[in-house]
Each structure stands twice: as C-alpha cells, then as structure tokens.
Length: 162
Ligand code: PNS
Image (cartoon, rainbow, N blue to C red):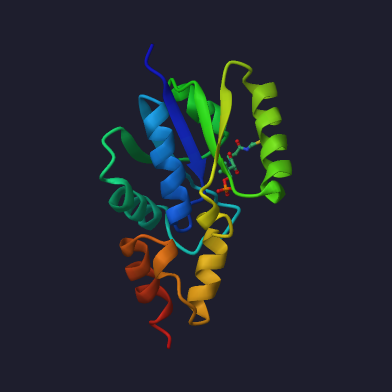
C-alpha cells in the first residue's frame, strides 16, 4: 500500500532543519507533501507564494517530495490528499508539549490519521524560522542554517532598507 505523508508548517522561511526532516520523511514514505499553511490571522514575513518557491527550490532534489499550500483544518487537507500520515519534526523537549497536544487533537478529529515525529539532527536543534529572520535582520550569520535560495531572499528582503 502506498503511503502519502503530509509535512505541514508555516515554513516562514524553510530552514535546513525543515529540509532534514523532509528528506528523512521521504526515505520512509512513498510520497511526501510539504504543505505550507496560509494563515490569514497571522502575519508572515514571506507570502505563501514566496514560501512555496523557496521550499520547491530547496527540495527539488528529492523526487518524491512535492510542495503545496493549504488553509483551514489540517486534517481536512490530509483527507483531501488521501494521505494517512502527518509528519512533524521535534527539536527539543520544549517542542514536545505543543506537538503532543496538536497530535492528540488531530487524532480526536481524525482517528485514522497518524502523526509521525522525526527527531532533528542535533546541529539543527536550535534552528527556527523566527530566529533565522531575527539573526539575519540584526546582521548575524545564517548561511549555514538555510538553503541558498532562502539566504538570497533574506538579503533581498532585509538588506533593502539598510
Ligand atoms: O510550523 P508551525 O507554525 O509550527 O505549523 C503549525 C501547523 C501549520 C502545523 C498548525 O498550526 C496547523 O495545522 N494549522 C492548521 C489549522 C489546524 O488544523 N489547527 C488544529 C491543529 S490542532
């Protein structure tokens, strides 16, 4: 049986930590859909089109990964895609409580869908999209934690006003 997994998130922007999780998921499941949340209630640094573009560029080397966007409830989207699995990455214990609650809530809403956690590489355990944006904004080094396409976009975005 072919298993499709959805790896959802804000990906604002995608980091090497996300790429690591997506690659590992692609080694386990037949198809992985990296799905970017369109959240009208939350302001994002990059538009959904920009986030999709960066994710596609960064993951183009993996045949069984596609990039998409979604709005509304995650479980509705997962069902619509006929996917049986939600993939989430875990960096540290501090992620666990939020992820545990979300997995249980999603299981209550859709008992047939499994949440599958993949533990990050320790070298990405401190990397988050928000810290990348902030560090870059204040002149710190982020080249080694984001793909080239994101680094270029960050330069375009935050250097414009310098
Ligand atoms: O990268 P993030 O911001 O931690 O991802 C969170 C995401 C997108 C997975 C979560 O907010 C989500 O699934 N939102 C869609 C709305 C939904 O289904 N909410 C109920 C989850 S319990």
